[in-house]
Length: 137
Image (cartoon, rainbow, N blue to C red; front, side, top):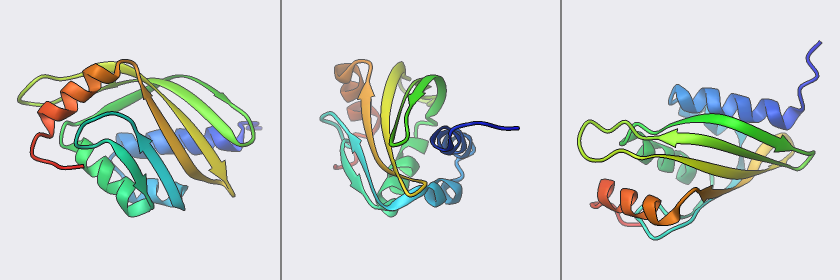
């Protein structure tokens, strides 16, 4: 019998879909009212509102072949926090390999809000400013 908490199951599904760049599957687990908060001062920072903006953000991350591997998670009935290793795999230019934590909020079995907390915001800003110099946020 599987006694996995529903929010944990949603996050595992998210990371599986993210690893496959399966935007349709990701879109299916996001609330239509999703808000994804990206801190910093770079072209990808800011709050992404709605499924289309969040999926566009993931599409932009794909430019640097970003990957994520969960390390530890804690959860309750409304929130989940995960710490994970994320890294880029660019063919040209510098890559980034850093820790990040995300605070996920759930409502009606969907992800409604996400806050990103990078290991070092200055390094993240420098990387994204370099890698995405042509984009405006």
